[in-house]
Image (cartoon, rainbow, N blue to C red; front, side, top):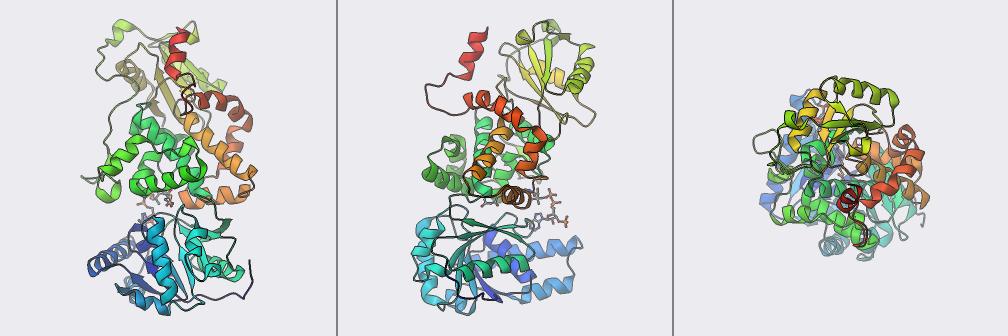
Length: 480
Ligand code: CAA
């Protein structure tokens, strides 16, 4: 990186006023900077203005912003469809759709509009910043500045430098992010950077779980929020991010890594084809049409129309988990109504206590192959209470929580091992970018690396892998 002296940024341009662009423009204007906010035509300019005004109004309604301050923020924003107005900005950031051709042609135009010292930043979440930079005559002054959704709330900004970046451009952008109250994490140019590279393998696995009726959408989300303290479950989060954005990020990640973990779940692709893109269109994994989020996908671990009379079956249960005291407590509460299985391997229903950052917060019920959903629901009802979250899952290695969490934590360990980011940066990125209560390495400490090493091989067996891998159902059948 060349060092040409830090530039203090006082005015910025934002191109694209969708969810992210509007949020970024709001962040800058609230930090006292003059902002030229640009869209392609007058209708989209107005939509952008409405988005930002609504967000500021909400802050006023909630008592977080004075009405006079909102007016001052709005007065710092210039809304226009004329890209020529960007010539006065010290930095221009774009948040246009995640297509390389779109971004490259925009940067080519910005290169002509803006003076040579202007820093050009991209909010891309996964495209190669190096390639975007190379489309300009000022590759040294092109950096990634990646905000998280909702931009006014999430404190992380990933600052991406390429092999071509000037040191002062990177430092100016880092300084700008800090002045806006954000925590910058500086990384090199690799698909997904820190947060998305870690997040999207996990989100995609959850999407596949929902699609394969491993568990219901609501149970997957409820299990992860309760067991790990996450602010949102993975499927709600995908709806917040936008399913089209999720698909774009996964396609880029898959193209760069060829890792099956990023091969987009087919249903995700179908939802995008159907323009069911999540919150922004009112429907994705959930429907938001009547205000409250309601799961759209049905399904669960068992065929819902299997007729079963619970009392006639008199199911046997077994309780599994690593915490002996919790297992004993749950077993005691079950034995009043159900028989304990003499041979745990032959139990009709497994009640599993995942080893997770919040032990005991979640009970996973896995009815084995011949037992119907109604049996699981009956047992679930008897276990509700004491603030526990009870969910129903297929009887597969890791059930829901461990199956999603352990590969996610393993990805974090691999990223640090690869030398891409430090443990502290990984933890900061996930805490401040995705609202995790603790970072992956802190979660790993809570769970224990040894537990992961023991369980991951089994969990991996039921994840997408080459066709020769033995199917989990086949293994089930062989056990009988
Ligand atoms: N704009 C501005 N402020 C917002 C907002 C928005 N869109 N959404 C929520 N807020 C504010 C609220 O006003 C509220 O502030 P106060 O407490 O001061 O009133 C605060 O955020 C909390 O909001 P709510 O009470 O409405 O809701 P919540 O407590 O459920 O929090 C959330 C909502 C902040 C979104 C939280 O659920 C969360 O942190 N979720 C995780 C989000 C995440 O992971 N984002 C990263 C996605 S990945 C990404 O963006 C990268 C990419 O490239 C795809």
